[in-house]
Each structure stands twice: as C-alpha cells, then as structure tokens.
Image (cartoon, rainbow, N blue to C red; front, side, top):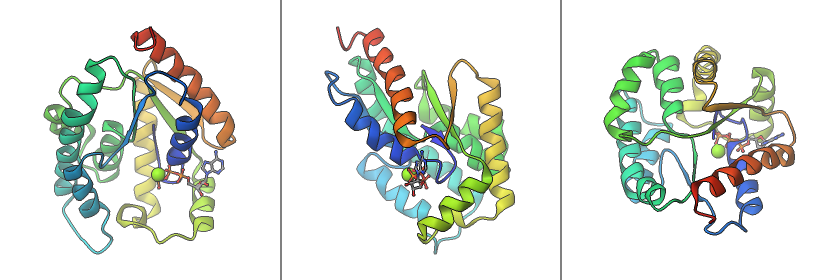
Length: 205
Ligand SMILES: Nc1ncnc2c1ncn2[C@@H]1O[C@H](COP(=O)(O)OP(=O)(O)OP(=O)(O)O)[C@@H](O)[C@H]1O
Ligand SMILES: [Mg+2]
C-alpha cells in the first residue's frame, strides 16, 4: 500500500486484516519504516520532529530499515508461499527522497538495490488523494505533524508527482485507487485482489 500521508493506508490495512482473517495462513502485515526491532528504532529517528538531517542520511536510514525488514520478516515468508502486505515500501523512498527531496529517482533506486535484493512487490495499491482532500484530512485530524508531514506544499506536490510517475511507468504492477472512496469500498476492492494472490501463490492450496 502506497500513497501520501492521510491517503488512508493505515485505515485500509486495518480493514484488510478483518476481511482476510479467514485465509489460511492469513497474509502477513507489516509496515515501513519499521517492522523489526532495529527498523522500529530507525523509524523513531526518521519521524522525530526535533531532528534535522541531510536528505541522503534520511535516504540511507530508510534503506537500512528496509534491508532489515526484507531479510528478517518479508523474504522468509515469501519463500514459504505466504502473502505479505506492507504499508509503504520502496516506492515511498522513490517518491519522498527521490522526487520530493530531489535526490533523483534513479539515484534512490540504486541506493535501495542492495536493501531489497530480489524483493519487489508483485502488486502495489497506490491510494491517490487530491491535495485539497489531503489538506482537509490533515486539518481535521488535528494531530501534530511529524517531521515529514511538516514540510511545505511544494514538497508534497513533488512527492505526489513521484508516485504518479511510478504509476504511469509500471501500470502492470501499480493499481491506482481513488482514495476518496469509502474505506469499506476500498478494502473490498483490495481484498479481492489479495485473495487471488493468495490462491495463485499456492498458500491456499
Ligand atoms: N476512505 C476514506 N474516506 C474518508 N476518510 C478516510 C478514508 N480513509 C482514511 N480516512 C481518514 O483519513 C485520515 C488518514 O487516514 P490514515 O491514517 O489511514 O492514512 P495514512 O495513509 O495511514 O496516513 P499516514 O501516511 O500519515 O500514516 C484518518 O482521519 C482517517 O480516518
Ligand atoms: Mg498510516
């Protein structure tokens, strides 16, 4: 699951857990940055609003956390035939660090090559949310913004364009979802596709 802040990724994941709990084995859910003890520590550093750092430092930290998650949690499960659902993955680094921070899409992809190895998503759901709706949800949430969310609108526009470019260039992998639809409808659509993956993988056989 990919998309800008407030696009509804966490909400979607919560609903998917419920809708897919009957699968045997159920999909493994995880999130980035995080998902392992070391990666959760890195997450705390990355999201700390008090901490300033260079864009490349940020990019390496995301890649470092990803390397841990891929090897310790994701790869072993994929090898056993299980479906893994991850909230944010490589595309977020491409969009935020590559496009948003301006490090370059190719550069951030290269940096991550060793972190992900052969693990690339078969299917990515990009939750597309118009900027006005994003702003509305942000205001409504009233939450204090974390370090990345604080950055201005120009940054978010570049991140959005980063996601859009990924969706354009990899239409077979990336399903674009209208994130203004109801949470129930979005979850139903995604659950159907995950079910198909589960059965074609053989983990349901
Ligand atoms: N489909 C939806 N329709 C309307 N509002 C939604 C929908 N999905 C989520 N929301 C609301 O939008 C806000 C952000 O949702 P959520 O936390 O799931 O987004 P997120 O993509 O996980 O954000 P972040 O990247 O910041 O973690 C929440 O207040 C949530 O209730
Ligand atoms: Mg979330």
